[in-house]
Length: 123
Image (cartoon, rainbow, N blue to C red; front, side, top):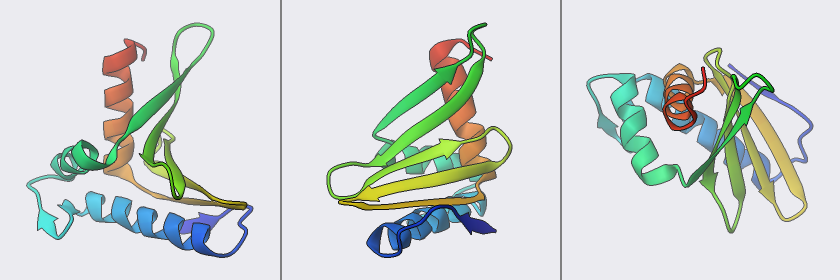
């Protein structure tokens, strides 16, 4: 499952789709051709090498509203937004190209929200 949103076709779109494939592999418990006991364990291995930074959005009442994980910077900039519903949106910028790709990413989504809750203390 995946949907393009407001995409300027090109490198950014291909990059977003590749990261979405990475997230789908995590749901299957795989990262970098290595299989892990659980999808969550795969996400932990992925995040160790791929999660560069994180941003959290909190409500006025202090509740967690959103989580974004920086996947790459420099060449293409890539953020992965966890939605708290088992999906994620991969957002890529490369020069003037922009792409966004939403996909199923249950393991990533669960990890991102757990991580954000642990860091912020928000629920």
